[in-house]
Image (cartoon, rainbow, N blue to C red; front, side, top):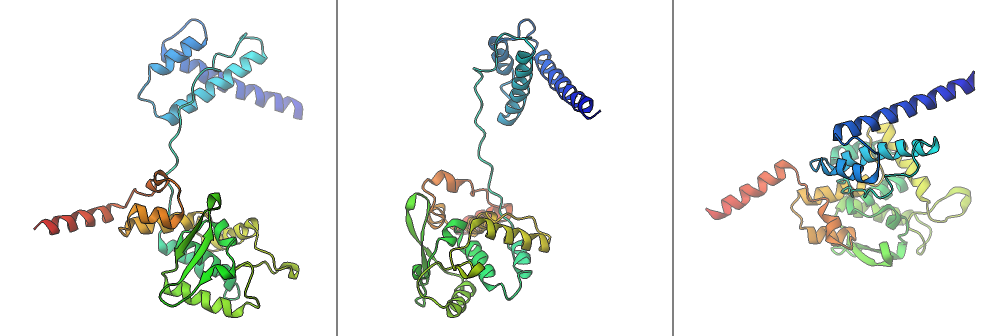
Amino acid sequence: MKGETGEQEVEEVQRVICGAALQILREGEQGGELDSRSLAAYFAAYPQWAASTRNRKQTTLERFCRWALQHELLDRDPTLHLERPSLPPAHPRGLRREEIERIFAVIPAEQARDALLFRLVFETGLRIGEALGAHVQDLDLTRGDEHLTVLGKGHRKRTVLLDDPKLVNALRRYLRTLGYAHGPLFQATKNGRGGPLSYQSVQERWQGYAGRAGVTCSLHQLRHSHATELVNGGVSLATIRKRLGHQHIQTTLRYAEVSDGTADAEVRRWRRGRR
């Protein structure tokens, strides 16, 4: 009975895919042979389609042709030479500070290391790997010039300003609790090994806190949220690029979609300056 059910499901999937593929061909008014020329003409007839729409329809056709080949209904795959349109990278989605603070609020006081690690990422826009790779000796908490040196992508070093007073004070308190002056800033304490925290462990902890707070937020979104705050605060893209450690300005430009309120305020400042 189980085998019959499985076969029925496969047949149903094949029926849906075949039906969709045939509908696509009918929409194109091509008729005749199912070959690479007719498929290319079909897609050329719809230049207004978004890349995501074309990709979805092309995937349907590829599945249909793969099935047809397996059942000897086609002697060659006409989709092999179809070019895939490139999809633009998704716009990074940052969360509002209030949502992030809701997550911080559920971190127990005894988990000061976790709270500091996540606060550091949120207030500086560090990659989580950069934060986990930071060492005590990379910190310079000279008053008025507090900064952290990190090793980013491509083994490129950069200096990140620690400009948030609460973060700086938390770092000073945290350093006083450490029994060492050299080594990973955030150490794992399991089994007394004292090695650096693993990404998987940190990811699980963050998701646990976010779930407890009822906020959907990935660990990487802390970095996006910081960048979004900078953009909405009027910080130049050149400065944001340097702070986040982007090699190319095109990466930073993905954050340039500022809020309507911020855009309106900027126009008003410009208008007042002309009077």
